[in-house]
Image 1: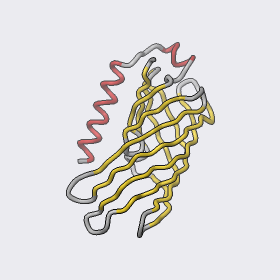
Image 2: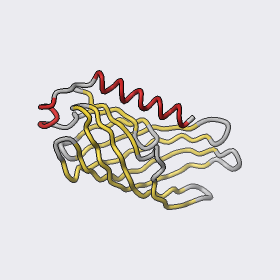
Image 3: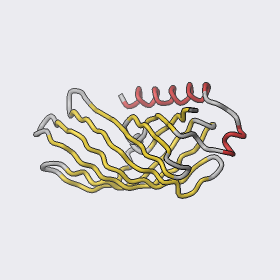
Length: 164
């Protein structure tokens, strides 16, 4: 299943880069835009820029199948620490609220506050890929832990900026 999902993500990135703008002057004057959609940290994301350096991002993700069932929605603020021509270095903080229904236990509400940093690289003016690392606390009814997240799919993402 992971191989199918990885192939799907690669196909989306390739097709989006074909249809994305390729104006090199636009990359140097402004990275991205004010509204973006994408996939980041195991969820679909919607990003709105409040200024050149500060933006808000909402996310929604789920997992369903024969084993555990999960549903999560979250929000976070991203602040650009250093802006270059083709990439940004940013810090973020946020909270995800979810519902977990494990196959072998009781269902519970999950709260996941997190902090971290990341790099967003612009392939073209309105398409970027990103990598993140951070720390998060997973707070549930009977099971709490603090961890770094570094699973190969959770730290990679992409965003497509809409030209509005």
